Image 1 (cartoon, rainbow over the protein chains, first blue to last red):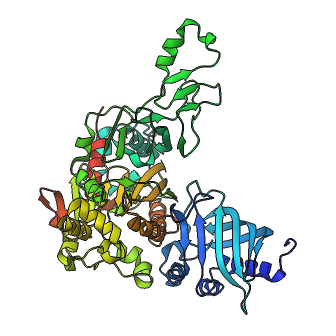
Image 2 (image 1 turned 135 degrees about the vertical axis):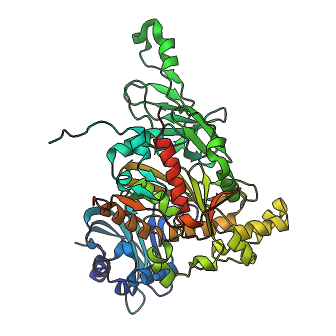
Image 3 (image 1 turned 180 degrees about the horizontal axis):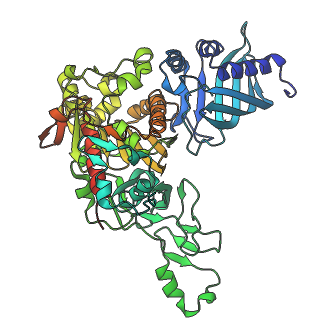
Length: 158
Length: 428
């Protein structure tokens, strides 16, 4: 259940983003993103500077597009066939709001089945553009609980 | 009905698992072979443990497991880098649980024993319990060091147990590959401080190492990259390029693009063909250090693509090291090879590493999947022997080692296995 101050449309956007990612609907997921501005970020250390320290993923809009093209190619062996996934999102909190965007934090647990069942968990930060005709994703930061440990292949949309 | 043969594998049996053109499938799946590898290769031979730039100041340390042994690599007050077993000599407690940090001493939280970062036992609470034996106890119970530690251009290697060859003898011709990487820095130094990706692979460590120097797989494994992201640096058709594979001896092997890049005489083919105008400070610093001609050659030839036996891979502008966990589990660690004195290069390097490598990498994720499928395939008892004959007829020897101008030849794999066979089959 969303907490105070969170418009149901924003929560709905986050849940839809999750469902499209779960179902590996790559192009539909990509269309949620702003056309120009995007940061899709999975850091390794929680408070790192991405320009000095390595991240697992630190995609700008262009790299995000490459990632989706690769997934759509049918030859991304690590997701062919796609993992079967379902994630739970809870603990939504409004972190920031300005005239063009809102930033919402949430917790997630994701069950990924790919011959073995892997659990992924952590915190999401979604920054959503609110000043257009449609809600669009500007930033998605994923803090994995085990980001400093080794992680298995992460070729799906987290 | 015969009794099950429970005798341990004799050295001659292990040597027999490698043929000139084949390797027995059990090398990837056998628990017994794995344990022998951890002993004979990872403890009784030289292995890569760390880079000096990871512990630049006195007190700096990193911890990691090499061949299963938890180690602390620490720079002492005297400036020396030591490799110590991360195990309290009292009751075995893992002394240091942080990945890295700075400390002049380590205190065990079990009974409060304190060790200096040079390994000596400096304080024992309630010392009267050792009567007049205390000095003897302290001398005897320093942290267990690696038997031998040595380094080459900042790359720190250790032999946890004693070994009869020097690091220079172990590295042999592979020092040229390390030189090739370091010489891309205007000061000749690397800075490995960007942090590490740790990729958990469900496959044997040797599959990952072999794949690093496999010049045959890219067109198929990485088809999705070439079709949708960017074309290959150079053609994959061996007859069209002067890319070669090389067995340097000692298990060190590589894919070498130097001749092809020299033929093209183009700088930075290995770095997205970045124009030198986009990095003016780097070019100026390189030319000041090496002169314009040598700088041009260096920027044409680029970094190495070289496996340093057993656990280090110079992955062009990246460092990769493998940590075997079990016959079917390995952690692969990746960091960009940041160049001292080259911030323009380093900014781009982070993004390139993130794009290509690690669990989400455009390249490595698919290598991981293929490795996993190999491991699962090897649950089959047939075929017993896996094929490594590609290019056998066209291997040639020269002063640099055994070389094959078909980059898809399995010369590097054969070189890796020859060293494996030698080390595993030794009677000690």
